[in-house]
Image (cartoon, rainbow, N blue to C red):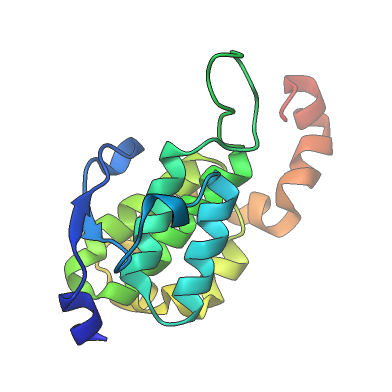
Length: 177
């Protein structure tokens, strides 16, 4: 894998939400015609590359997803569609998986990507706790548990889930959604 990474050219993909600019390896020999055209296409290709054991090129595609038209709301006919909430969550979560696979030197970026996925509404904490793709980050990153304490539901919320809280008398009274 290291010989493959050494042969790749590096490019900056610009600002990406809370993660800021980050240089990552691009796909070797990629051309404009082979670039994904939509967010979902970039995410699907990134997931395939990650599954094939290539986290650096997969990361480049997940980051590229933020620059492409999504499947979300079309707010202005002169602009492309926005990314859907699911696409944002998926891109950030999969970026965290890539950073986890890339090693300890990317822990900070991995935790930032994970936090961005939480802020976008990712809430499948049970899967996160057992996902093998993020195991290294979960087991070795110093601030992983601190981040989880901020976002993972505890006590009543965890025991009964969000839907139970929303449907409770308090939830109906305060209009929690």
